[in-house]
Image (cartoon, rainbow, N blue to C red):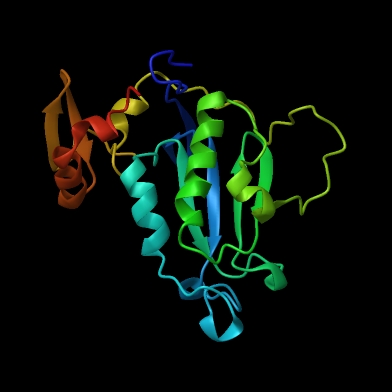
Length: 210
């Protein structure tokens, strides 16, 4: 862990898809948000008594914190159970943490605060007081504590981070990339002009060494 900021150093795993090797950033976890825009049957439906919201309400907070390379954000259709919506689920440090009744916009930054606290601590923490009434265990406890790898270890050859667009985390070959910039003594490649523009607006937020 990086003692200066409490973050684990970034790393990648090499995966093969469609006959080609790619580098994928290993993140601490994933936040899933049930959303009307993505086909939910209850979450976000004001006529069903839930707080209406646009996905941007969550994504803006996620982007503002600059945690894309530590916590992925996914909007989904029905997460269930519908009776408890608005729903979200945080998968972090091997644990699935379920959130219910997220029917106040004030709760969204608190969910991210909680996630960041656990990322910094490197372990699952009890929910803070403001979220205690919104967290529950939906899944049964695992039968054992041993970590069971789902695939053979995919060791990277050391240039994994150099091949990643620091904004969207796509694998980009610096030798053939059309959009690049020199920063921190190396050439950084981007998949598109929009990613390059976002990086130049705040390079420190997307630095791959954090």
